[in-house]
Image: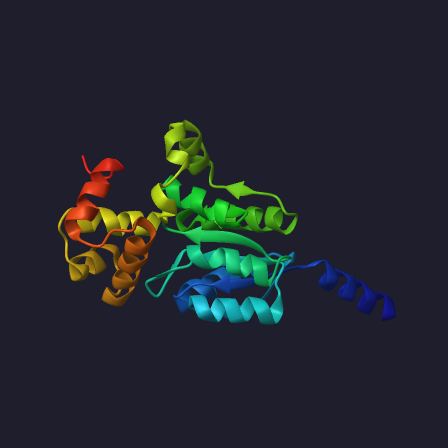
Length: 222
């Protein structure tokens, strides 16, 4: 009996602890079932927004955090450096529907070690989590190929604007209102206003005419 107990304890100690962050409960439930069907993983906790994710990681320090890139309209991208600072031993795997290589690059630069598309989660997530637990990087193969094929100029973003801020800036320059931008990007108007304020602060411009000129100079408008 003692041998069985010791073996079970050793197995539990060897498990990779995971926390899940996604604003859709059904997605979190599906991920929990997927991961816990494999004896290597134990899901410690779940969160549905950015602030809850920060609190969760500080509390349970999982080995790996599986992080949705957009929760409740808020970008999780900007929270990655803080997550890494609060729990440096927690590795981050982004799980998202965003197929744009710019988002993958930004996530990895911010401190994530994995980037998996939700449509490929069944085939790729467990491998990504396993590699992340070892401090190794996993990038969706198709996105990796697209990143490698991109010209070198795409390695930088003007004035350190995030990919989401670039999207908002482009739509502002095209003449869309905050409400229209919110609808197009599936964000709240308040979130769009926040992004707009950050953009204006970073580029040092305030009027739409100035932002249009800036967008043209950065190649955001054809």
